[in-house]
Length: 144
Length: 380
Ligand SMILES: [Zn+2]
Image (cartoon, rainbow over all chains, first blue to last red; front, top):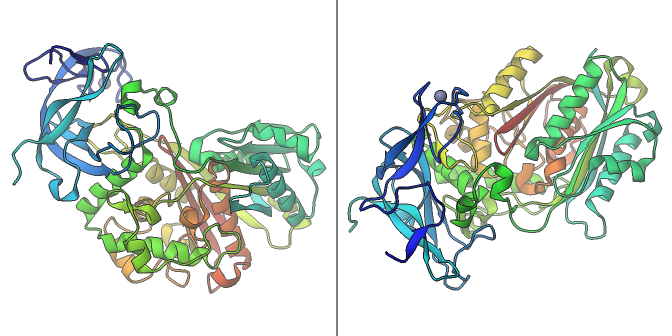
């Protein structure tokens, strides 16, 4: 993955052996936020510190994106090569639920409460041919 | 001073290729003025809105330059609710005696096309495929079904009712009832919701004439009184569309807070409501909104739908004109259509879809992104 970089800086630790989601924690009330926030939506305070949100959680809810979205969706796919993807909220150890693409894309593969882990995927290549990365979650245990 | 609704006007929802959104708004306004037996010169103020069809105050170019106060309202799907709320305050305060509330829109076919920057989000959120309202609706009802034991059959029942009621409503866009099999086998859009479980963007216009209650009979022999009009936005923790993260504690939605305030202000309770309009952007929304508005407990919808309690002849008829599912959603006009349908029912003018036993008290609820709800309680 040498010729790769995040699509958007600051969402996850990179480069890293096990990338982790990066958010903020309010020093006044303790609430976490993702992506990073300069002010707290819970208490309106402005004392925010960076927080490592980890890379594991459980599935809180899910759906499946069955057709290729219009703009602002921007990948190298065409309607012919588009592969449906799951979308869900992953409940992290801190309690925050983060919205994410899911590798699993059929109802049979997805159950509320199942353990999930984060992985990197390429959204598209930029003009120089560099892979632009984002996070997604997938089942933490192999499925049969 | 109490507030009365004395004029109802609509340009039918659906598709009118020959008319702009603004022209559909003007047609609705003229119809409402005629229904109230008055003219635009008599209007002292107007509140209006459209999402995609230009500034509502441009309507004066079609209706007449009379010098009235005309305020544009932009509150997403809650635009109509916010416009009526503003008109209610204008009359309640004694500032004005009579005015116009109007909404219209003409959207492109297909789903809305939101841009991340307009919602305070960075581009990655849209580019990676998370910026679709359909995903949010699917995920919210998916969790709700898990938590409260709602079955897929109940989703189908709501869709079936919507199109059946639409088939009884001359102004509805979708006037053909759909069979259980047709709905059941429709293409999936966003699990667990399929094509016939979502409403579509549409076109149309809707207008109301509102006035002081003590002069209402000058305009119409059967005025409907607006007991209260409440709009609330989301609290921290409410699960809303376009949220990259959701706090640990799920808070009450703005629907709950608006509904509770409306019942308190009107001095009535859910058991007093004879007919209701509940925002049904998709079938899950109607189901969740039954409980969020206080009409039943979470999970009771399963039994309510199975027993037909929200049918036109049931204990609480909901979305008697087919709601957003059968009428489509011209955003600026949609919340006013709900109010208009309740007024039609309270006047007794519902024809084939009239709720029996002369309903006296009605309720409307509109909900819109990014977490706004408007509730009106009406009585004759
Ligand atoms: Zn805080």
